[in-house]
Length: 177
Ligand code: GDP
Image (cartoon, rainbow, N blue to C red; front, side):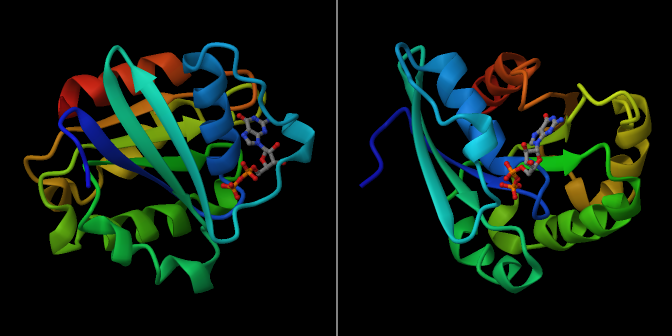
């Protein structure tokens, strides 16, 4: 049973977007003495990774779900239980950004996610050729009517270096608590 001040956050996005790396970075940044997995050892999510982080007395339970197309059909089983979604975009992969946006639109159209804050993270900002937030934002702001009145924010992050991780989590906690 979910306690007060305990929230479930889904981490979604295409395969290879950096979901697992992001969850590890969040744990490393926000958990004292956490000895994470070496980023080189992280492999793409198949199934489910779970993380639990305490942010100033608010407990966040993260569910990092696999992003391959055959696994995306499982996402909606988790929507009803979730209080927020972190959607990770590979900002380096220009070829798949439209695919990522299509999947995002399909996700936010689901009734069980109405009113749930959406944090879109333009990941891999450490890579020189990547799209910046200025490029990613207009793509994800298309079809804004689907977002409706939900809080929705696009922020830059590098899951690999940890840059931007704190800012995103802080925004999310302020939205849901
Ligand atoms: P998932 O399939 O979404 O869980 O993605 P992973 O976390 O397994 O990451 C996929 C690949 O992208 C791995 O090789 C990661 O090391 C790499 N990766 C993830 N985040 C970043 C990032 O911020 N910068 C760079 N350069 N690589 C990243």
